[in-house]
Image (cartoon, rainbow over all chains, first blue to last red; front, side):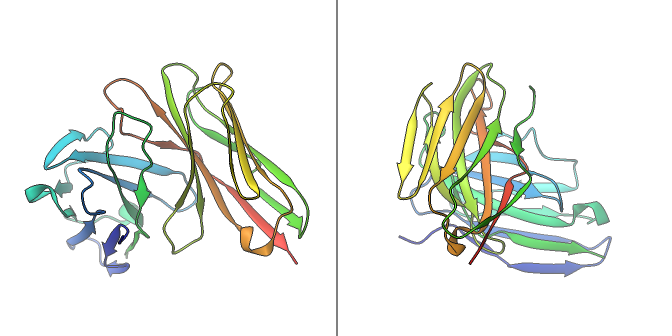
Length: 115
Length: 114
């Protein structure tokens, strides 16, 4: 069974540019999550999709971040325009369900550097 | 306690030593406690999901305990090996509208020297 995949693995962009990150969850997992780790700090929740609907987007930092999951399969996270403080590792995770003690399976992350 | 806190921040041990780390989390509205093992540039690997007070789980040389009343969990590694070197993360899940959200600690960085 393929795990959670993320693309690209690394991205270096200049302040003010746009970047789109992609996540492909484990097949059959309706729940998809985005998290972010800024250097030196803990991994922080951004948002949670159930199929194509946003269940919880309380962690999205501001309106420069837009997450979509059209068709309930893969998801994209767009940052526009990027700022220096957006640098970090963006993780995606997926799970079978969200109301039980189900494991969240993580991808390897996309390392974003904004210069 | 309002956040998830892990201690120590880092740990250096010799091969063969046994070691343990602590995760403290909010005990109110507790739902589940997750442990992950993470090597940089790889996917965090799920170790345990624990829900019941007094729960103990084991996977090979790694085990974990849970105390939901006082809000802490211990992770133990018996006979550490160099391949155990990684960052160990714990994350709590609370009940209510944010069921899916995991709140992470900063992690414990373990280095096992041959």
